[in-house]
Image 1 (tube, rainbow, N blue to C red):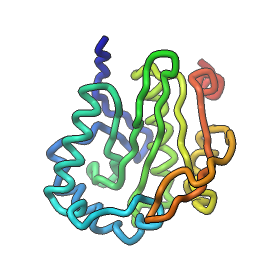
Image 2 (tube, helix red, strand yellow):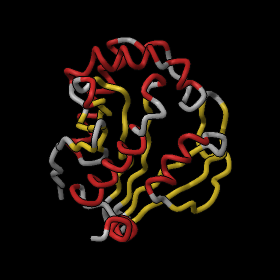
Image 3 (cartoon, rainbow, N blue to C red):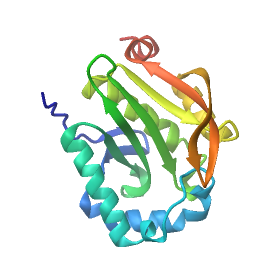
Image 4 (cartoon, rainbow, N blue to C red):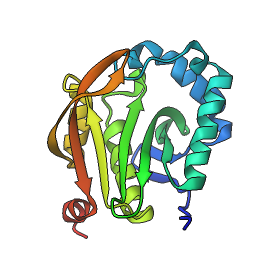
Length: 194
């Protein structure tokens, strides 16, 4: 059974998210190059080709395939006060249906757009999409214990800490422990009075 999920733009104040599109290629390449050093500590080791137009075009093609198969929902994070300037990415990934109805959550915001609430609003918008549009039951981010800014984002959004996964993901060439967080649709409804 194929699930069709609409591609929607959502906005909260100065932050908007919308599905990534092929026309985002120049802005995405620019943002990735500009934030390369800033994000290195938090991401997998990237090949040089990742930071090229061809590399980011491959990423956008994978994003489109994820949408078409409903296995992932990657969004551009936009600064709505700056004419929808692309400032990051938030993605519901590894979507599994059946008895699990789950997705993992990942996100980044450009260094120059940080500390203005964009990440918190983008994650909250992605949660609204997950539970109200995509029909998921659970969303799970995993965060390295030393990433205090990212932990603040999920705590502000109402995620609960569920434990620690040792040597969970290989980040920047090292197997890193991660704090596991989760939110269910029931949690979402309780937080939003629905």
